[in-house]
Amino acid sequence: MTLSNVVRGPFQACLLGYSLDACWQGQGLMHDALEATLAWAFGELGLHRVMANYLPYNDRSARLLERLGFEREGYARAYLQIAGQWQDHVLTAKVRAPD
Ligand SMILES: CC(C)(COP(=O)(O)OP(=O)(O)OC[C@H]1O[C@@H](n2cnc3c(N)ncnc32)[C@H](O)[C@@H]1OP(=O)(O)O)[C@@H](O)C(=O)NCCC(=O)NCCS
Image 1: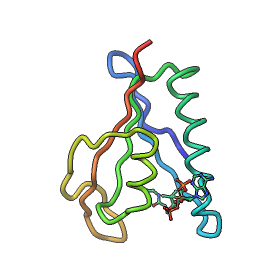
Image 2: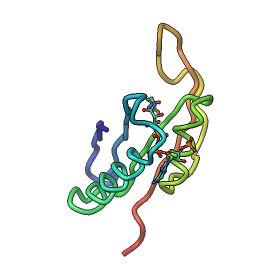
Image 3: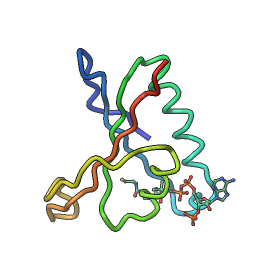
């Protein structure tokens, strides 16, 4: 997994990316890894918002993010160029729980 585009100042946000080899999927491993990553991001790193975006047909990613408490915030047309095509993405984010 990666935390990228970290922006400090009044935003305190980053983008989350993740990928797991096919033979390790379906066992809850990425869920557990991301739970630990989010605790680190909201704890030690002091971030306020973690954003994660996925292709509309990526059901596994949608389920994973929902279980982690990410909320859908929007839908971006032609958001990323993947395999030579500009493809729409669902935009989600998780905000740090109030202290
Ligand atoms: C997105 C991706 C990381 C999801 O992987 P995953 O293994 O399904 O994610 P989780 O760790 O949440 O595992 C959940 C699955 O494990 C199963 N599972 C088995 N034992 C489990 C346990 N003890 N705890 C939780 N889940 C368990 C769940 O039932 C679920 O399976 P299901 O979706 O078939 O119902 C993976 O599909 C992937 O790497 N895809 C390619 C790259 C990609 O799309 N990246 C995201 C770009 S936005």
